[in-house]
Amino acid sequence: MKAVVLVGGQGTRLRPLTETVKKELLPLVDRPILDHTLDRLVRHGVHEVVLSSSYLEETFHAFLEARHGEPRITWITETEPLDTGGAIVNALPALDTDGPFLALNGDILTDLNVTRMLALHRDRKAAATIALAHVEDARAYGLVPLDGDGRVLEFREKPADLVPGDINAGTYVLEPSSLQAWRPGVRVSIERIVFPSLIEEGRPLYGFLSDAYWRDLGTPQAYLQATYDLLDGLVDGEPAFGAPFVASGARVEDDADVDRHVVVGPGSSIEGGSAVGGSVLLAGVRVAGGASVTGSVVGAGSEILGARVSGSVLGERVRVLPGAELVDARIEPDSTVS
Image (tube, rainbow, N blue to C red; front, side, top):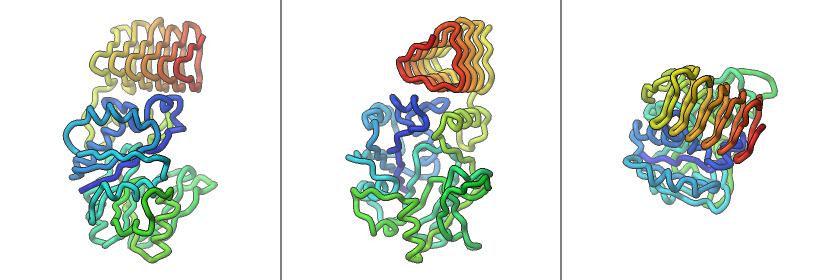
């Protein structure tokens, strides 16, 4: 089985973290988000993956060099953003398959059973099959209604009111023939153009609705919640993490107050008298001087010295000086806050 993993987004909702680190390479507990995605694919028999991005491409070099074993990875450089459908079409020559393949977003945490999804796709002789997730508030997503046989009827725009519904979960099984109408190098959306075109042509497009864990990691709140869920063991197939998770080379002093929903990245330290709750400290962070950090993500190399940080996102190498207070703030890399 082969797959295309889409890693071309700019991660604007996660800024300032994504000003220096590609979203899919942000650490998620013990390893980058993209490692979680690739490891899950391997568990379902995917042995070859194509990755493609036009944004911060150079940041992937170290990741690719450090990644060993399966899946085998082929990198494609997009000279300009091609959107979801265009990126997949552009990857077809490198994918080199005449059978069904997976295509998925690289910024999603899920335990979706793609083996079962592929079986349904083949059983229905589908041109394309879309993983669906049920959400109680569909306002941030388009709705995907199905008929009684599981065939996709249409793609609806984001609802204005708070309503539950089934949404596109960002994982697809595709036949190469479903993309033959589009040529490589052309920008096209698979959600807004390709799939509606297949429906209009009468091609068999099916939905795969499951109760799998699913979370789009596009916002700081979602990133933190996914971290909590991993620490709580809610994602099948993931290892059992210690909670709090203290990485190799990190240090938490005995009289520091740290709750279970905390990740202390490599080389980071939480010194005595300080308190950290519901937060992620990336590599090389120092929390000292009786500082308090709650519900926040702290970028690599930052220092919080006798300050209070709540509900905030700090870029790399931020210094928050004694007496400062940050609430629901976003602080650019290399800033000093007093």
